[in-house]
Length: 348
Image 1 (cartoon, one colour):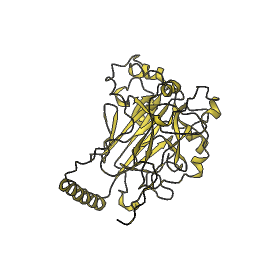
Image 2 (spheres, one colour):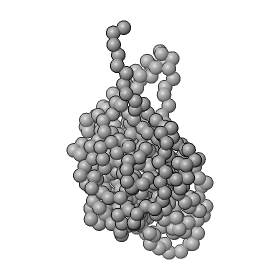
Image 3 (cartoon, rainbow, N blue to C red):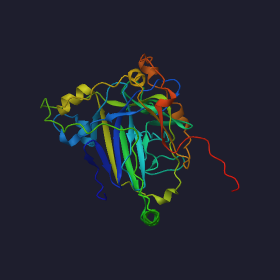
Image 4 (cartoon, rainbow, N blue to C red):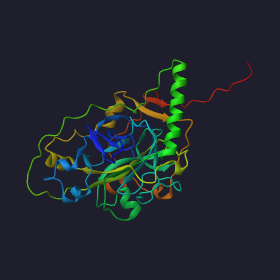
């Protein structure tokens, strides 16, 4: 895609440069301790703001983009499965970079790094807040100070999620294509089929297409939602191995993702919102899998002070009273490289 247009296919966002993004529902983690990666429990439905001009707030029409419904304290992660060509992706939460904690910028930076490297980064479950860990994305309303935006900037203005994609610069893209051609040739000679990418825990099939909106008339202000943080999990945010000059100076595409409460979703779109989030104790008690991802060839990106200091939403909304049943070891499924100890070689 080179037209600079972000497209919606089902519940998948396709940004220029071959970037695909899905928003995945998941189990909310306890706010204490560090945990394996929770499972994907289906995709959030994604709809274009432009399709509902009579019922979305006026400010949303001005920003454009897409919207999706989230419950209070519901958790999500971003999946980048299907992104084959190298790309740099900026992820903002209320116009605060989820990787660096710096204000939203239209330029890529390496000091600190303010973007993800795709497809090496298969998903992102939260802000880069610890060494080898992230704190889970959790939806909260604006106005309480609980969002990442509120804690880092001292005010809550934007909410939602912001995405911006950067392709490789022409010379770097030519080098990558040549390397891929050589790799494919070598693979064919060895009669090894090219490896298929994976997208993490499976998600459900796309939800039905939207019906006609209800409640025609003047749009009203919707309850604005943003992302705070919840529990900590084992996930690395990978450092870029390329020089920043390998990436295009200008973004190829961008999109604003509005977060809306389920009642407002029904009013705006006429669709029933997704069912309420799954109870994590019931999920774990049923013996269903959690996940662990490891890439031995990648380096974890150190967190910045701004994101390390972000507190979980429980500090504003009260303690999490949902019971917690830790998964058994056999329920945690490895993805990517195995995390076992290396085997030493010797003389043959």
